[in-house]
Every structure is written in C-alpha cells, then in structure tokens.
Image 1 (cartoon, rainbow, N blue to C red):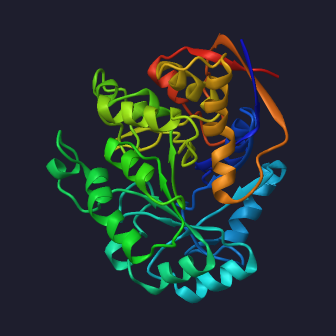
Image 2: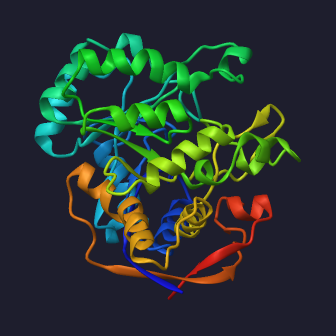
Length: 364
C-alpha cells in the first residue's frame, strides 16, 4: 500500500539554535515537510520582532534568518512566534503585525517546560492590552495549556491534572474576555481539552502530537521509557481515545499536526529528565500508525481523506496559507529509525528510544 499526500506543515516544532540546527531541519525535510512553526523557547528567547540577535533575546527576524541559513529557505512557510514575556507590549504586537513578521505569539506557563522561565501567568494576560492588540490584529495565540505553579499531587492525578484545570478554568475565561482572539491549543493531551476545542468557535484549533495519539502514561512508567517523557506528559487511555476520536471525525477542521519534536543530546541528567520527544524524520509514519490503531483503513478513500485532512490540510487552512502543491509518498513497509548524528551530538528518535519498529516508511 502506498500513500501519496501533499507535503505537510509541522505547526509546532523545535529547531533550537547552534551547530545542530541544519541537522534538525534536514530531518524535517526528509519526512516530506513543506514548512514549520518554529518554537521561540530558544536560549535566549525570541522576544522581539526585528533587529539583530542580542544577549537577552533573538528577534523573529534574526532567528528566521538563522533558520533559513541552516536550510529552512526551501520551506514554503516558516513561522516564528513571538515569545510572550513581561516585556511584550501592545505596541510591539501592532508594529509586528504591520511589518508582516508577526503572525503568532507563544504563551508558556512560567517554568512549564524547557526554557519557559521567561513566561508569565495567564491571569496577567487575560483582559490586558497585549491580548487586545492580538485580537485586533488577527495574530494567533499559541498556548501551552497547563496551569502553572501546582504541587506534585495537583499536577497530575486520576481525577484532574494541570491541563484539565487550565481548560476548565482559564480557557473559558480567556474566550469570554477575548471572543475574537484566534487560538491554537497546542499539543493537547486530555479528553477535557479535546472536547473544549471541539465545542469552541471555529477560530479555536489544536495541534496533537504523534506520541499523544500512540501512547499513555502506562507506556512511560512501565520500564521508565524516558524517551517518551515530554510536557505535557502523556495521559490515560480515555484521553488517548478522545484524541483519536477528535482527529478521525469526518469533516473535522480544528485538529491538525504539530509534533512538538524536541531534540535533546542528553535526555537523562543528574537533575532529572529533559522534556521532549524527537520525532524528526518519522512523524508522518507515527501519525499513520496512530490512525490505524484508531481503527482507520488508510487504503480506503475515507481513511485516506481523514488522514490527509489532519496531516496536510487543516493546519494551513487555520493559519491562512495554501496547502502544498508538492507531494510525498509513504509505503506500508517496516523501517527503522537510527540515531540522528549531529555536530552537537547524537539524538535518539522516539521510536528508537521505545524499541518501536515503524510499519510505514518514507519513499524517495
């Protein structure tokens, strides 16, 4: 069986900075990727619109130039969001939107994930001038949707977790206060988040990663498979089932691909485990496997259409650019994912870390 699809857009990924960037971009190109939204939680963060990089932050302009020089110039689309910090102002938003450089902003809960120490609480933004300016200018808000500063027991238990709290408490408040703000709920992991997005207005969408469609907390804990450790953490079977329903619902337009692929040369450290699964080079294969586990026959017209909608069409439509006219192919055949050798050191792809043999492979 062969799948022929439009080249797709990874609308949430991490290319980092430094000597390995070209390797990460090439891994995306090798898996049929036509473009990307590159996360701004670099060191230092992407916290300005234009100008040269400085010791306290990149600008969208300078970081985009760095990525293009490393191979991203062949992408059809490259979006770099602005990292929302306490230094972000409504004037910055308006000037960035007019310049054309600012298409999205990124909300990180303080210390919520890798390099998220520059973020600020959502309560400090709701009702404020920054969100009002984004609403007026049509700038998309990309949200890491977890409540911050929770204790361990409150962060995750059987009844609730940081994500469900955020979608039950903060997101309704955000939509009520800023009803026209375009929002992408990124890497959602729970039934609560999936149902919230499905019921929200059409200008609210969501990305879902391959690991959250494939795995549960049990996969992570059994044998402590730390290459599966990411934030938000994988959840429970009912959550995975709800995500699978969301992406396989006929005609759905709100859910689309965003891998949150996050390379780390060292995952296990003396002070804990680095958060992030690297799925560069293998994400379409993993998504295809997840759709099949959800019960779809990708050889059927219906199955093919649902997979194409999620992987290739919904994301561009939401962000307001055309789907790619170029094509790539996958075939139903086993394949392996070797270490990605980079100038900064080797990166372990998620399937290799999980001992998983892929059932799909990319075709030349």
